[in-house]
Length: 130
Image (cartoon, rainbow, N blue to C red; front, side):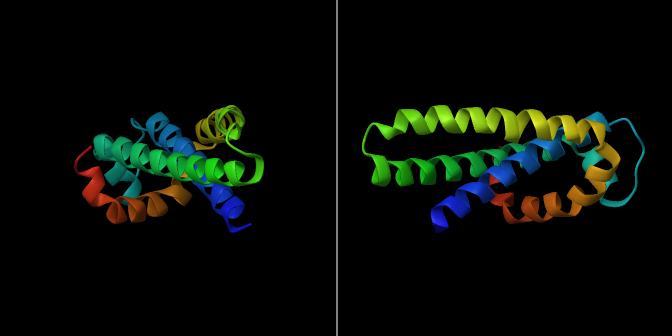
């Protein structure tokens, strides 16, 4: 049961990072202040942070979903997990969040800038390599 919860949280984080990337990129040429301005001035850090965050979220969700499905349904479930998670990710973790990020960019940025910066600090050793 905890695996399903972590899979769901991972997919939520993937959606968050996808929407955040689109929101910030759509506002790159709009003057802002505070932390939002810092991200605007450092787009390479923004993209590296969202890339690492998205990848961590997808890898975690996929690994746990595959493990869960193999225990529950057997060895051939890997194929079904791949198809199912790909569809879920495409619709709910990429398309919809990017649409919302574009449509509500100023509001999204106000909420996301601090969370994204906290993740940037947390994952800095990996982000610096990217």
